[in-house]
Amino acid sequence: MRTVRVTRAARVLTAGLFALGAAVFPATASPATADSSPSASPSDDDGAPTEAGTSFRTATELDLGQQGTAGGSTGDYLYWSFPADAGQRPTVKATVKLPDSHAGETWQLDVYDGLRRRQACQYGAQTRTAAQGTGSVDLSCTLRTVRAWSEPWADDPLPGTYYIRLTVTGLPSSDQGLPVSAEVQADAKDIGGAAAVDGSLAKPLVPGIATAEQAEDTGESDDSPAAVLSSIEPDDGWTSGWWSDRWVWTAIGGVLAALAGIGGYALTRGSGRPSRVPPGA
Image (tube, rainbow, N blue to C red; front, side, top):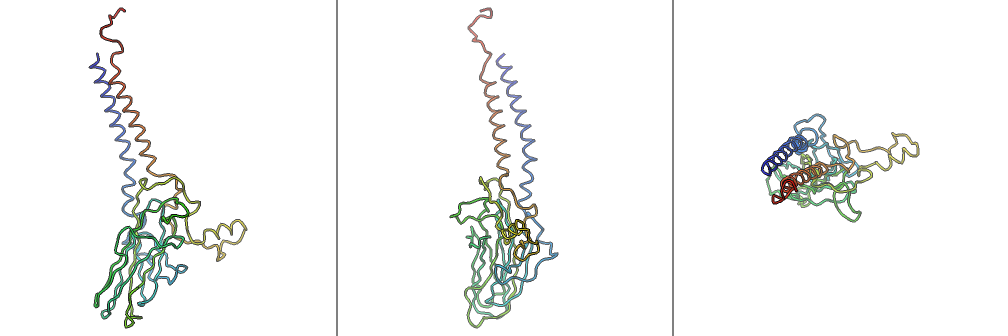
């Protein structure tokens, strides 16, 4: 009798695990596909900007995965902006094409968040020196994962608009004003629940969002210059900050614990009556 009970409990536990696995893998398929790119394909050049701004306020807007190009002169500050949402890890890459004759130059790629705080790079060649006669120089910067919420004193990246600044830091006077061209692209990898935190910002750090809300409260016209919002945002809109796939894995862990408890009880409870006790007692 005990052998029959143990076999039946093992079959029930095995069936439960297989059913759970069938339910889990379809639910986790979508985050894996989101790791490639959360927006337009980099090969889609329709509407790609061909110029850069000269300050934070005039930064040229880029969508994630979109390549921007610009021409300028050595010594110029070139600015672009792009959106990054909670749970994403942005990566910015830039290529500067230099004239045939130039001396040694040092180029630098900086990324700032919506509060215009310079963000540190996790990895990547943020600063590089182009030797004399080098045709181009490649720069890259991978930021930390964007958090949905952070302490005011922390320097964590937060959801909102991010700014790219490309400039030359070490420049001989003989190279001042030489023509250059730049290519910039920003991508983001979706990290998911591994980077989720409790809490969220009331609004993303986007230029003009505070003045736009004030205009709505006071009944001002939406076309007021002070109420103009940045037009770039993630394809799916800004997240609310409370949902992540961490909730899915929490639920899966609870179901597994329940199945393990049921299986353990079925395996260890026995027949319910000691074998030495007579049946009629």
